[in-house]
Length: 492
Image (cartoon, rainbow, N blue to C red; front, side):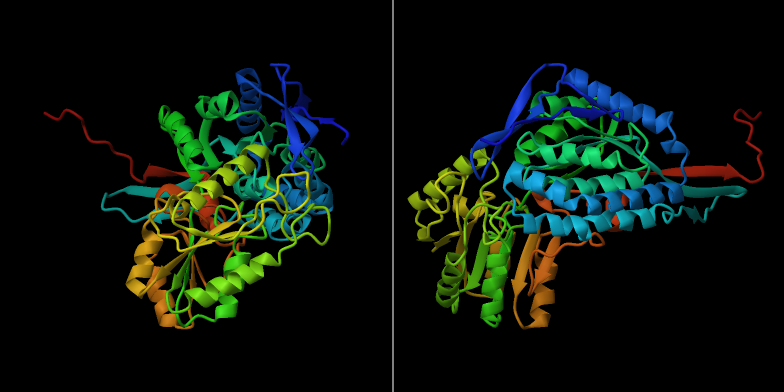
């Protein structure tokens, strides 16, 4: 048995026991053993964290700092993350089963670069002067923070998702209360300990843990929370949007996808096969941008399918701490059981199961390997509903117009891949695809500088890049009379 770690929640620079006196057990998905307990926070705990963030925004040193000073603190956070990357990665692997090679290098590179990137933007958001048709009047715009922001993160990549929100939120001058998924909260709590090694004032960053109800709902509904950024699924997004709408709160939401990979007849077949496989299987499909629909030209669908099955069948599935492992476990039991149900449902349809990822890997743990279905039509549940697992459906098409129609025939619109050697076609098709990110002859790339977000029910707002910081700011229009002389309101 693993030693049991008991966490507290973090508010106003201190650790606290949950008011409920209750904890949530966290399983290691690689072993099915309980290794940690996280606080089951209620409305009392949420209010304590929000009040700490509110005080830090209005009364602490944070609002007195200029952008340059905030930037220095963000750079210090980046340095602290790099110094603690291995420790944070080990906790996240234990908590959700993600392979260390998919966590630690990111914490030492592009994810940490988010703090450096936004540190450089803190003093770059300039206002603007607006030419007017009103005499003796000046009008200018300035960007300001919202105040207290609620950050709701997902279990598939807790620290990566958090950093994409936290760095721009702080750079903009906000304070935050974070609510990580109840299935993977430990690495976020460990991150609070890392933040205490920096010059970040107390109360600027706070964490409450627990379920969507009551913890998440209480955070979104709190009247002192002015803006919410959420990553998760559509049901959670609907709940957050409904609650936030009662107080007209702005939202940024990234809600998943059913991303198509369009493989045209002139594609480099080896490149496309490896790209499609890399775009879903190494992370067990547990990424919102996973390319789970392989939309392949009918002239090469047989050869493509044969090669994809061969490549995916070579994956080594096992304990994420084993350096030879290429595909780790599903992050938690409820999701593992959901994926199994989805595979069974697809089997019962007219789709053909070519590669079965069930009953693979170690005897203990939540393991599902690459799974491939052929003869899939786009109206099947397999093609329409996000499985969020290592399951690919291969859908044939005959011409470009049909490929675009299939790709766009979805409630989602997060990402799409195009595999072709015809750049005119690539640009032409990319312009018509309804997705926030288009990959051409590559897939799964991300960087702090480039915005990410969805079309349709994949969400709205953007993370990363300048747009990612702008979402955490609001515009103020200022009118200045240069020759004050208000007219008589009631002339004779």
